[in-house]
Length: 510
Image 1 (cartoon, rainbow, N blue to C red):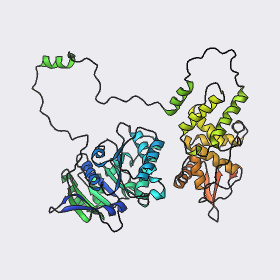
Image 2: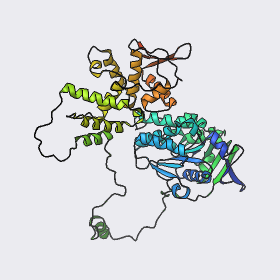
Image 3: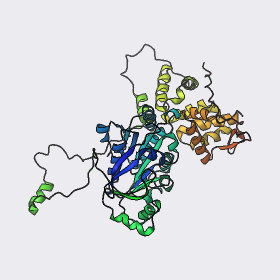
Image 4: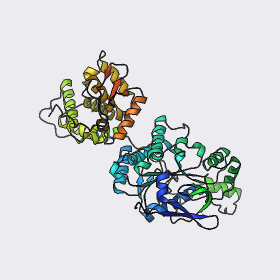
């Protein structure tokens, strides 16, 4: 799309029968909020917008109910099943931006917390794309109150925090990265205000609760007494306002769509002829002759997916059929030799240049293979224990010395245990730099320790650890960063946060 081009999207008709046009370029710069109770035509509006803009701009749809997967057949969207790991979703999102493919993230079948985590991971991958990939993209989030709730609900605080952070990034900071947020909600009162406030364009549909009508009227610059009009709107009718739509509140009726949702509105169907009481009793409680198999629910509950640690531990425990007895049993390693072999396997893994960017499950599998090669017997390390040992080894800390009762590292390991597992390695690396009085690692170094190439993610990671009070960051007079460990007289030397990342040091095994 050239800088001189102006693309107008046909949303439907306005009063008088004229076309209700939406300026697509203006929308990409100013974002859109859609509100309407169930049955108001909100999803129909989103589908019309997606269909009309599909030839002009890349799209990503966060779809909690699987209603928009029908776009794939008609418009070529790729359906991404969210029932996969968060790291996979981040990688897929990065490739989506790289190859400029329109996608639908199908969250159907996940519970509320899983949906929030999956959407946050996917939005984070879109947001953290390299600068060269910041092409315009329309990001549509249906039922946005699920991902940016105004108040805490039944989900965990961590899931709500990451999901709300991803939605805030989309609406507040996404424009500079080419991401244009289009969020739709049934209840404005249930949507976080800092997310809703970033939209400059509004399409308000039918709503009945006073608090939602009042907020809709405020957003449209209408008087409170005019808010009653939202109760009288018919399905598919909205009040439009914004630089991409209209400078004054304008009634709009949304046009027809070419694709349909898999779910439909309930319709009345005539009942069968009434049966006698005895016959009705027999119909319900007597199995028919054709019932050859037990009743299966319409949507059976999917079996629980085993965690990666369970799968890896099961693989480690599995053994091939016993070979013929050997003449002499294989020698077993002493505890000291076994520990040395495990440490050598960890050093070999860390010596690989791309180890920091591989998933923990892949590294764990590599570790188990290296232990088998070294004939390390006994119960293998669990995935969580391996992650902890890898983080300690990466920071250059001697685990036996650190776990001694009089060691100051014992307190540091306790502080690390209060952080999420994927952040512990970064914290221990910062603590090691503070202990050694080395310059503070740059954003690039912190990102590398976290397994990322995004300096922005590194800065958010440091801010999160400072909120948890495990580090204290400050700047000296020259703008260089210093990181201190609370409770210990450890702090790094000043370091440039914008410096290029330092290459990984060779392993002692080399």
